[in-house]
Image 1 (tube, rainbow, N blue to C red):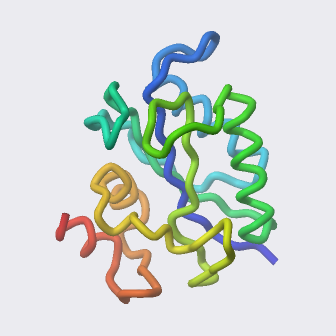
Image 2: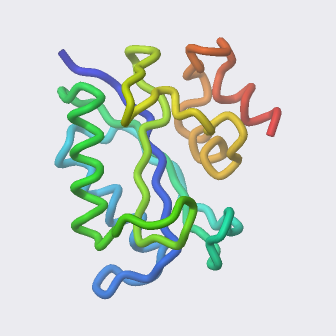
Length: 154
């Protein structure tokens, strides 16, 4: 049974073969097709650093149709991050690639390593702006608000 996922992508470090963060995000969007069918992609936008990160980010979102359940998809996303050179480090630090499951067609999911909806997405314009381009009618199963409504509040 296939599920739909809204996935957020971000980068603020250059990659040795993919180039600048904007290019890293674009290549990562292609790589995500290994986990299912990409049915929608936002533009890549530039955003200010968050927390201890020092460099500006490139951010985007996509909708992925996948046979994977949420924990399996998370494993796949983490594997893609590692192939791009992502290393575990401090929260919100500089990174080559960050991939997050924001929303899932199955509603709410909660395990120690994964919470859907993403706990902080409602206050992050760098997630909501790209998401609003491709999935404005998707609803947050916790608040009942659409991505469009959440984006208007940020």
